[in-house]
Image (cartoon, rainbow over all chains, first blue to last red; front, top):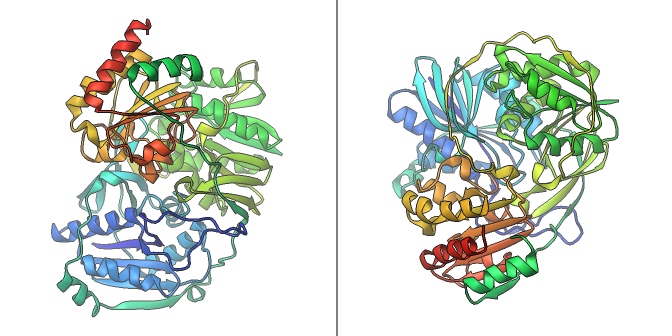
Length: 249
Length: 314
């Protein structure tokens, strides 16, 4: 079974983003970019399937600017076999990403597509579900455990009330949650080896997908700030303030 | 112009998330119908019919909708699409799962987790863990929207809408339900709790959650939350996680205990009305958003607080 892992290049999770003063977006110049953390978990899970003999090949695909090839290299350094870069400039919405991934999936014919449940930049939480819809495949989002059963999958999902376990008929889409695994760090030899692994260069226009945004971003603003309050000296003062000043007790 | 609100419910009753999403749905300005999809869900449909302003309730009562499987539920919503201009659902795990599938089948770009309805096609939504707020205008003829319920007031009762049966859509049969582990608790649910007591990595163990956090929560009649670090470490179950990728809450009082205040945690609780932080590190970022900060060893301060509240008759 081939596993396809879509990955996104996003602002590194440690960076505190700043809204541009003219309200046109957030400052991305000279900001550290990394692989979306949930996608790292997806790459790790695919590699574990391969190491367990359940998967034969792990293919990492990214849609984005030329620099997204660095994100693909990160996946290759972790141990993926090869990459596909679909070049697209500007903001590509989850729906368009799903359409491009559908075209890639139809060419690659994976048994499983595993990707992050959401990207930490636009926090949309849509791409996996949309891709499943377009392919007519089953989906298991927010996975905390994945088992392969022949061509099918048994997936435990993190839901509001606890955990849910479902069975999917393969081929299927799984999106990762935090507790699925802890991604490995790429070793230096593997980083060197990854430089020789192939990345197939494509253009979004090769697939005839319309990338025109459906959502027009009118403005990006700072959230309403919250000021630090006061420090209290002990529990008695805390209780007193909560009771008389805040009125929440 | 009609809006279809898809209800969060447990077959017997309507969840508070539905009341809040209804407020957002009504703000679109069109009539609102409510879809209740479940199994033996007549009582939930009747409850939806009593919500103020609801014009009609559709009840799709079928075993296919018993377990939140995305494929049949998405097929059902899409089968109703021709009658509606907007599809609104609370951003609970059920609808985070289902609504993007609906959107893609309708060739619509979903607007996720809106925090404000500016007009019938323009919405505010947080990005980058709430560090920026985007105003977006949807150009799609039909809208698919999920609602961050913590920012909308709940719509109350006062209606008496008719309940009609909706035919089940063909089940794609792609997935099946195997089981669930749902924590049974008498405590309020996190997303509707008036008070939340949360613990972080400093709790050091599951036992300490039970010994320090839970008695305080019970004294306050509060829900129990946890930081991602505490959940990752196995000190608390996943459904307690508050943050960017867990639950987003806005209670009257949020008590953060042994939580440093990582950006992704603040994203899940900074809209709380009053925030209390107890942490022994006086430089912890949580103090920058806390209304009342207590720099103290939680293992002393929390039992003291629990006891002091007991004396107050809590």
